[in-house]
Length: 127
Image (tube, rainbow, N blue to C red; front, top):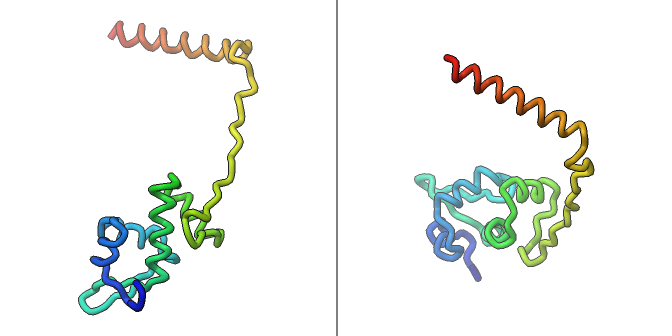
């Protein structure tokens, strides 16, 4: 990518080890971040800065485990890092269920569901 202004999709595929159909899919998912220039016959050509963004997106998805939605949110919020190594995930606290399992209301609900299932089973068996 040193002095190249436009790089073909085939070269990007080879450099990043990402299938062409995946690049085309990412173009649709991240249109503000990945915008190749189309040449004659609809061939896609990528600028070096676009290839850098694709590399970051690839690493966020494949190495950091982000989802498409997660990367979209980073792009939307303007927080797409320049390199995946700069990405610092925010810790999401895991909230424990505060109602004890032995709670009377839960047991009543379970009993009600079991009764409904028994009734449904009897109806099905009688048909």
